[in-house]
Image (cartoon, rainbow, N blue to C red; front, side):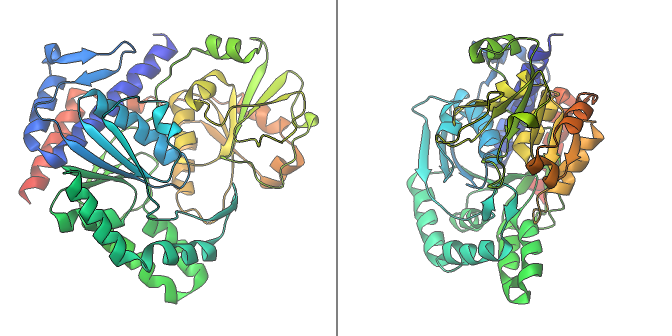
Amino acid sequence: MNQNIRSLLHCSFSVLFFIIIIYSACNIAIIHNMVAIKMGMKQQEEYDGDGAAAVSSTQKMVFAYYVTGHGFGHATRVAEVVRHLILAGHDVHVVTAAPEFVFTNEVHSPRLFFRKVVLECGAVQSDALTVDPLATLERYTEETVKPRASILAKETEWLKFINADLVVSDVVSTVCRVAADVGIPSVCVANFSWDIIYLDYVMAAGPDSRSIVLQIAEDYSNCNFLIRLPGYCPMPAFRNVIDVPLVVRRLYKSTEEVREELGIADNVKLVILNFGGQPSELKLKEEFLPSGWLCLVCGASDTQDLPANFKKLPKNVYTPDIIAASDCVIGKLGYGSVSEALAYKCPFVFVHREYFNEEPFLRKMLEHYQGGIEMSRNALLSGHWKPYLERAMSLKPCYEESINGGSPDLAGDCFGKISCFSQS
């Protein structure tokens, strides 16, 4: 089967399975209908022009989807789920500090609403590879801890105003408490939780900051269940857990179309440099790349001059198409980059980032599927790229798990778990 078709089916099935689970938190009857559809009632399915499943629903719902503003990985996976929710006829209110273009690249609909709100700071970084634990805790205290009472009151009022049926969080903790206070169900979607990330920072800052982690964990414990994505770290705050396959954005263009649009010959080796903004010390030079290679740079500033064998990509570029058309990725380990590299079988050369407890688990998943190798920070900055690129070309990424993400067996198993949760 053509790789792009396989990738498209992978995304559609995985996200469809994901949506089946989300519906369950609001109405078990809807889950029953959805599972029935997946288990044989094909006549109830429709498809859009791009081949993505549009699922019939017996009830229109209002989703309040909270998305952390930290990095693009959260927003990109949410965008794909939101696209399917909109396609199924529901209203989705996205609450985030992330750029709107991440979502509007995927969805154009009057049923999609945006609310620009900062409810947590994520991790404070001085550049793409440097996390500042103390600055993170200080900002979190100022933006989330001190105004907590005001945040709870405002979000309670807003959820009532939009008549939300379900709160989905990726992975803002405070809103789980808000949903419980309002009396509506909530679901978290994550491969990590902020209490586990901040635990490392508290160890660096000292025990006086311990209450931050305890409050985050307590807030998470109010959600009905966690939809746990692959590459997950331990998340003991959640009582009920459902595992799902990778959720990644679908492809729109073939490798040939991408190369033609960028004016790149078929015989040129492509590497995409994707750090969400390059490390501040990184000064790109022509000799960094072997002969016959071209580097596509994500996040380059408008004023940054690049050598002839480096090419800037627009800030709103649709990276899944670029990754699928590339021979290799150089970047940091985050869910968005890792999941898309695995899904589209693009070798990943990664650089370690301190103070981010998500990383060891993404690394384990990446290496398990023969999809990545580590480059030292010194090698990145000094331009010693050639041996890593050559080694990456020998990798054979083999992630196939999620192609069956929407299978009847998995959906049925999910329904069984949800039924148990609802009766407990």
